[in-house]
Length: 356
Ligand SMILES: O=C(O)C(=O)C[C@]1(C(=O)O)C=C[C@@H](O)C=C1
View 1 (cartoon, rainbow, N blue to C red):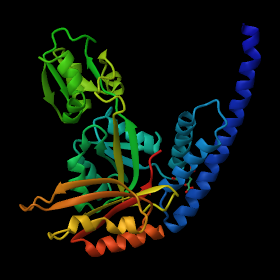
View 2 (view 1 turned 180 degrees about the horizontal axis):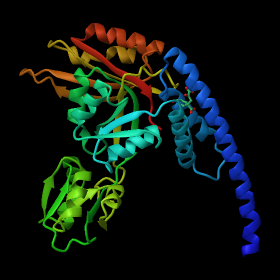
View 3 (view 1 turned 180 degrees about the vertical axis):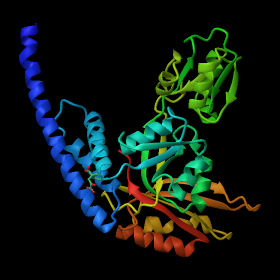
View 4 (view 1 turned 90 degrees about the vertical axis):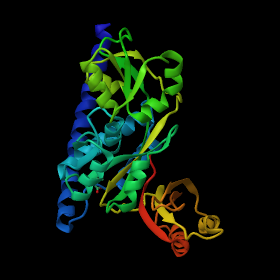
């Protein structure tokens, strides 16, 4: 056995030496890129370039490693190279261990500084003020719909969307002991409680449900009090020393949350982009009907349509629309020009590469 392993391990050692040498070469080129960018004050983080590299990696992947796995490796290689130019700071809805934090690493890799915030409002504020270079905020969940606070804040923010991240959301029920003995309360963010309600009704109908600021906060509470169970990611459970009572308790097994990356960066076209806009129409007959006509006219596909009350006391709404393409694409530019003409309010929230 050992005799057979020895030559294989020697081959791995020699391949590792080559990988290390290539990584070092890549790092030195990134340093040169950094110097060129510094001369022209150009942005360090280029989401469209990173998206193109990750797409190409999946296209060219000869196997046997999975596309997802090689993308994760390359994302972190780019993250480390980017950190040689500048280590970006990213704000998100903390504490550490939330799905938002997972989304941050999925977009930026791990060679970054993170700034956990107590609320979505705080993520916007930190990014607007420049305390963080970017912020990551939840936009919608596949089972529960829009995250209204994010939509409302998008309206007035000076930041723009420069990326999107979609991650699977798997909830686990966890306690200090790994059992439900003596548990009186299940704590979680209201969204998580809603995403697990069928399971909770079936298995723990008589345990009080308590909505708290985040699942990670619920995990902290459970780690300090054996009468409290938390619904959170297993990552958060591990972080706060919890035992799993039951994994994957979300009602929808394909449950996902989409996040927006906000900042001050205008992202260039990557070839596969989304554009987010928000608009309001004058309060007259047929206005909503006519609103989207320019999209169809110019062959632009809509991927999402959401409405929010304008909160000015009348029955007026803001419409949040996501479309395929980039504001610099000719068809999109033409359609948006016409949309703008029909709208009482119009704002482009940003164009950015489609999530992987
Ligand atoms: O191509 C660039 O602009 C780089 O800075 C290099 C690099 C990379 O490592 O490939 C790093 C950071 C950018 O976000 C994009 C790509």
